[in-house]
Amino acid sequence: MAELTQARVTGLASGVDHILALLGNGTVKALGNNELGQLGDGTNVGHITAGTVRTLTDVAGVAGGAGYSLALLSDGTVKTWGSNFAGQLGDGTNNNSSTPVTVTGLAGVRAIAGGGEFSLALLSDGTVKAWGFNNAGQLGDGTNNQSSTPVSVTGLTGVRAVAGGGEHSLALLSDGTVKTWGNNFAGQLGDGTNNNSSTPVSVTGLTGVRAIAAGFSHNLAVSGGSLDAWGDNGFGQLGDGSTNNSSLPITVVTGLSNITIIAAHSTGNLSLAAA
Image (cartoon, rainbow, N blue to C red; front, side):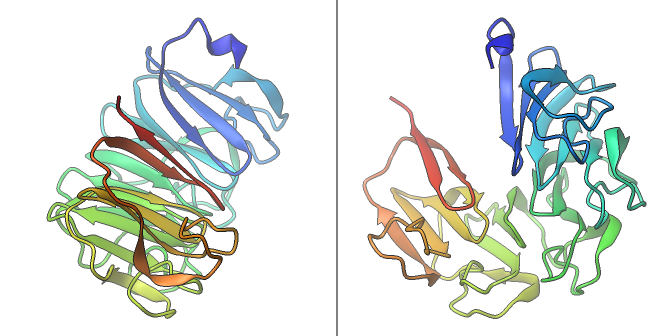
């Protein structure tokens, strides 16, 4: 991304096959696959150099999903673009868009997250809205009905952060506990079962959590001095030296005091520790 070297990048996000960069002037650049319009440049032509997402200004945050993108604006509203077969753009339609559209009825948003084909928005009052695909209950509204407009996640208050996986969702609460909902085939809900849930359940045994991250079907949490992981482990993504799934959090690393960022992708993880 040499074309970004002269710009001040203040945020990065990735979808399955595209990358978003938030610049210091509140605009967004994108590169990668664009067959569904996920680069937001008004075309369906992919490119390996970063192009400008059209019509976007005053952006405060970006997120990527499977074939679509999200932007949180400084006024607390959300724009989306790309694939929309399941309503993941949240504009009340199922039409793809190669330029940003406005998510219907959202205000006061302070954080966003993209999942497989669904989206999450954390509101300033500590509640969460979700929209898009809902085959496994990942919208958390007690149904398995997809929605092209935001619906409320049932029973969630005091939320500090959200994360979206392939077909499951996470919320970090202000008391340091974690809630999950959606697909649970590999134990990614962390409640000791493999049962899907269309409403939030508590991750067993986690307290004092200060950061969360979701992969396709596994999760990470930093709590106290430990990094914990649970869910799918087919490629060793839980980091315990095995390839056995776990429906309960397992401690991967202890003695951590300075991790500032964690990230999980489909089958891998990253962490950043301050010096």
